Amino acid sequence: MHGYTPPYKISSKIVTLLGKICEIVGQIEIIETRSIPLKLRRKNLIKTITGTLEIEGNTLGEEKVTAILEGNRVLGSVKEIAEVHGAIKVYEDLSQWHFDKETDLLKAHSILMSDILKDVGVYRHAQVGIRGKDGVTHIAPPSDRVPSLMCDLFEWLKTTEEHPLIASSVFHYEFEFIHPFSDGNGRMGRLWQSVILHQWKKFFAFIPIENVIRSRQQEYYKALEQSGQEGESTFFVEFMLETILMACLDIEKSSQKSSQKSNQKILELIATNPKITITGLMQELNLSESGIKKIIAKLKIENKLKRTGSLKGGEWKVIE
Image 1 (tube, rainbow, N blue to C red):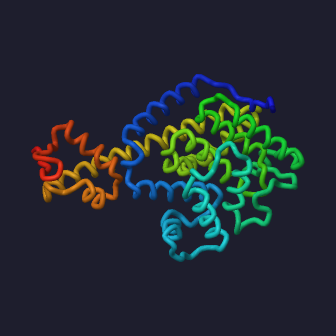
Image 2: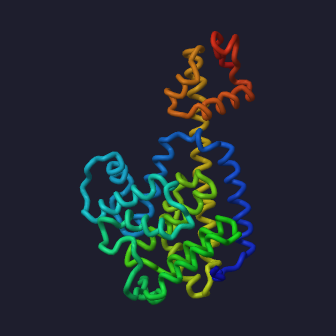
Image 3: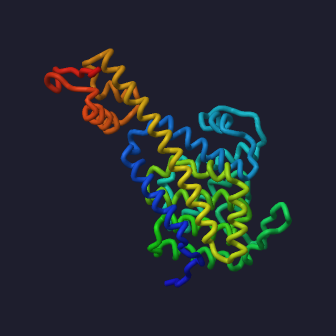
């Protein structure tokens, strides 16, 4: 068993941010994943893909990413379109990836970069440096050390008792430090943090953290660079927790707006057709049965809706 532990400290800022994120995560869970419309999930998937690619210089934007996702042809370079196709494939179903399997990470890289690189799904065989505006900002470890460094990192990820929010951020930094692939390291580091978070809470599959990183791109690079200078990931972990908190607050706000619209739409549909069934409401609103029932229960508690008569022969009544 490997005894490697990445260097970082649990600062008071990390503790505070952890508490805030866990609080907002609890509120999102109350909204319930299944009652969040597919339209919103799709919109956030597009934001995620666009954000992570824009960080790497892809210029297609949300409109063209949406068109590609829908199977339509768009104008753009072959490389940029290939980047979108690869990102769609790895992000569409995060549940296919096991966060603690190194073989899954290699497979995800081969899909993400399939039409862009020749050496996909394998670690680099050359020395690399990361360039910033002021020249080379980081010399990655020698290529012959990459397999053992990645093995150690995954062993730590499998065995750590650290909170997933912290563990995912530490992994993200260490991954970028090792820079294991010849290309696609930024995209893979961000993807794998989302994979780890999805393993913790499934709704992270449609929280566009990558899009928030894109809005803070210079701070993102600065956090990576500062942690590199300090020889530990503490500063980067703080940055990522801030970013995750912002993304969670955005999804909660969007979900609440969507929930309010769904509540109002159900009341309107029932006012028009008091005998409408749960199945009818599901079809009209594109929500799951549990999502519809949850909204109805809430409307009853709020004294906005009541049921008269039997379950089969009765009808709904909107209370003004």
